[in-house]
Amino acid sequence: SPSQSCQTGRNGFSALPAGCFHYFGDYPSFGYNATFWTATAHETYENTAYYRNINYGMANVQEDSGDTFLGFSVRCVKD
Image (cartoon, rainbow, N blue to C red; front, side):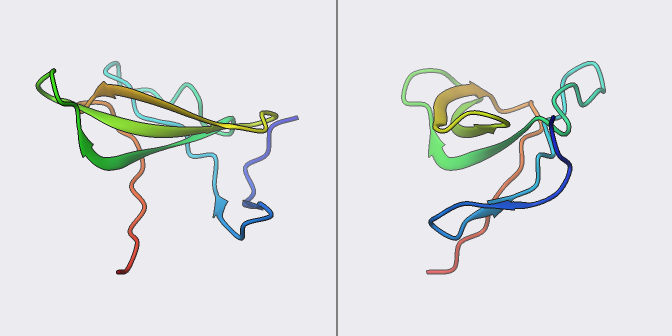
């Protein structure tokens, strides 16, 4: 079953399944996935950027682009 606890992968990265904030003011995926914006804007579409999505029970990370009005998490990485 989905967890609201932090899970650490083999690479040492850990994430809480915070879900995302939708237009309608809800968090439909809370406890099931963690979605993070990248620093890369979409080359063609305005107000669109790339993100990575980690889903409960899936072994891979999904990559896609989406409307920047969606409330995804951000991950700060120190150079």
